[in-house]
Image 1: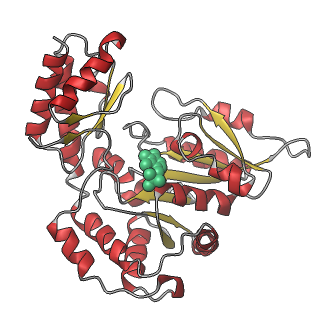
Image 2 (image 1 turned 180 degrees about the horizontal axis):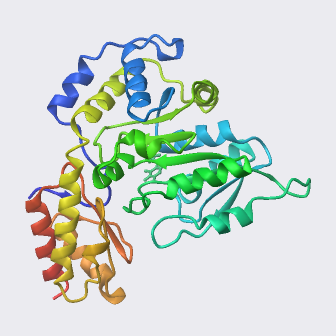
Length: 337
Ligand SMILES: *Cc1c(COP(=O)(O)O)cnc(C)c1O
């Protein structure tokens, strides 16, 4: 029985073609700037996102942290979603390593931050306060694409108030495929953008941070400070190039699978799910609390892995087929009978 792993889109494993380009990659010492494959990946991402430069980093966490440390100094502040990955799931790195104060604010239903509330939280120029330097957004956020026009409104606000604007675009290409807009269009309003190669794109390791040339130069220094200077990293960058060339358009399949899953589950008593709310590769399903543990055990018995949570998050990806979706719907139905 094959395992169906719906816990995250990080669980994909490199196939033979990807492993081949990794094995054959031309490499050098990237700390000496001698790795042509890393250079090629960085140039490729800079171009795709319409930025002057890019930096290959070990993870999305390291990418966002490099961005925070580059935009903000000690006792500076950044405004960020209370439920945003950068604030909630990155170990407080900005505070621990940069002395940067977060100002979290609740996300609205659509994944945006209310810009009036954001503006009200920008601190006055007075030594009682931290200096507000940066606004940080996420796209997609909980599988939802930021509404068209919203990043441009955020840009207008930060320009008016002298802040910078960072995007945690771990799943930016899911947003691009869903909205029919290019990565560069979605990245345009932002000073810096982080993308993950190891989420839906299906790469094994790594993220890329993009921005202006001077920003990337400073971020490269921070990456070294963080212990992220990697030597023959072209082995990993080759996989990154491979997924950017081969796995962007196919994200539409993951989105279709997520919708199929939501529609299947919506017909099952006990599953609370709105297929209309599914935009990309995530489905959130409310379940009867008293049956959660038994359901997870039942699914595990069928070779289906899910995170314990209510609503439960299901994530589709490269290694999930439409048969896997049908098997999951059937197992959920049996588990909730
Ligand atoms: C996964 C993720 C990150 C961090 O990436 P890692 O490579 O796991 O460190 C950042 N932001 C978002 C929205 C993510 O989903």
